[in-house]
Length: 267
Image 1 (cartoon, one colour):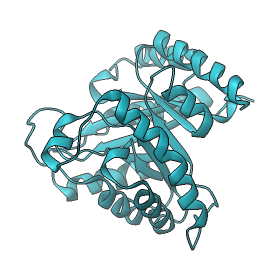
Image 2 (image 1 turned 60 degrees about the vertical axis):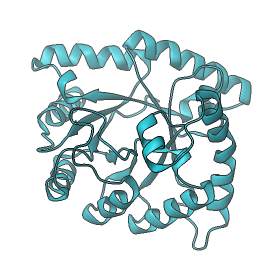
Image 3 (image 1 turned 180 degrees about the vertical axis):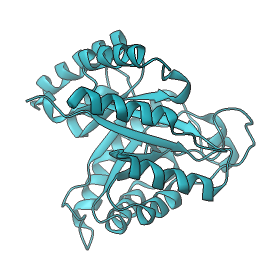
């Protein structure tokens, strides 16, 4: 059975006010989006590097209160910034605030300014990846003993990253959603690698949803071009399309186009 197409929204917490960002969450939920995420950074990634910015997990708790239907979470949480036991308990608590709508998005971290400005050791890609690998079982064990337990018993895990030898194997072992990056051909290749890891660890690859990011500027104005672009990603294995945009306005025109495309595809 084919997996349903889902549409998400990443409201990047940069370059605008909390009130404007919150209004975009509420509008996106009303439009029919399936999930709303932010990101886990301490400074903007685009434009003014010292511009307005807000912290990830306090915002997820606010997002959980401001919405009633959508899944919520970070795309993705940097494992380096929080003790894994603490992160697990934060996730369990926000899961209850949202009445079971949290997805725990996690990654190994990469943005050096976050580390240096906040006093974390940046290390190397390998040391960060190994720390990420070692933290996942700790998180799962902590969530399993928390009282009260997660609302649904288990909080879905999203892993962002594309390293073929280690990261995608960790996806095969632990993730419910894989978030990848690249062209349709690159996504197809990564999906094939992920499927091979699933075979190695004895997991059905159909259990893992495959998601990609579409920045606001990457949404073609022409509906035909958008359809062609998205169908190429679907053919490559992606079924979860996440629209990302920033303040000060958090415009949702591209998100509306994605939702219209999905509606037309299924009507």
